[in-house]
Length: 141
Image 1 (cartoon, one colour):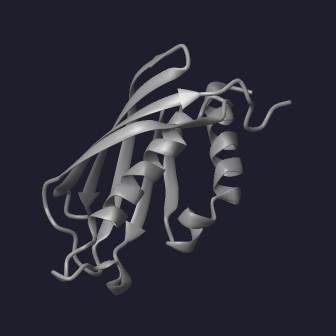
Image 2 (tube, helix red, strand yellow; image 1 turned 60 degrees about the vertical axis):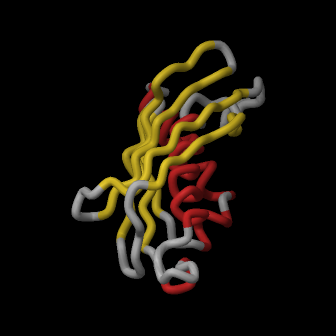
């Protein structure tokens, strides 16, 4: 299996069991070793008291792209920590895409940057995630 095929197989397995991602209508794309994107439409149920997208949902979208990017090497990998900066508000009906890119991977630790954009290319948030991998495989025995 090529690294690209492995990354796609891992994403497929991960998505099949990810009910949180599926229940919010998040789709996964752009999967490659150390990379992934996640897309979601902001619904009225995702708005806070200011009638803007709740930051938790924006964080969740970024965290989803991060999770799929760091799980492309057939090792169960989880978040060790993450930080987010919110730059612009999301509104009901906005289609958001979070794009995750691996910055560093050494041993069991990884560092990933995720940019969340609106369809018009406006950057809404920047997220940095730190990952920790286990020895457990995702798809291979």
